[in-house]
Image (cartoon, rainbow, N blue to C red; front, side):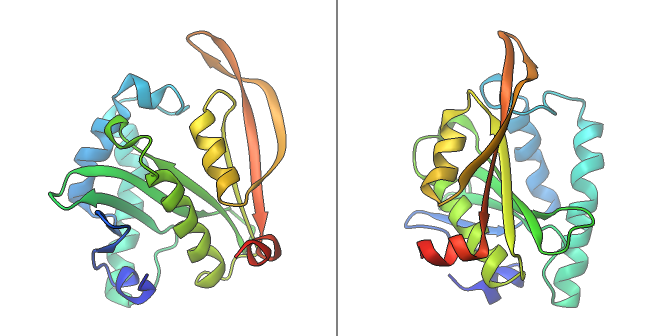
Length: 194
């Protein structure tokens, strides 16, 4: 994968059939639509919500990305959109900073239902982990997910992340409560797995 092209905002191959590119303003329509899907948002504590909430969160990310492209640097919180060869939205992924902890990042990925079960999340997690350690100077990458979100934590485990803890009954859900699982990988663990 060409980190240089990715950093400069180009669309680059993600796998045999998909491409990935830094987030753009026009991507928000697809992202917000995904958050309205009940099957997707059952594992998102912030969705469903009013679009102004999403705009308030993603607006600064898009703005920083646009500034980063002009300044030829990585955005503070690199966020990417994945599409198929026809331009169909297949998901998003990010490797975000942890406030006040330089070198610590969090990986995230959200996919629309039509992209589930195709290895997209695993590839996204792999790429964000590579980016964190090989390009962004990270020493630790973490993630968390709902305990019932088997797809998410299995993705993390496939990518070498280790379960580091749990908050039992953390989330209120339509079916009661669910736990919050914590995963992480250090730079050394990543190097040992490569």
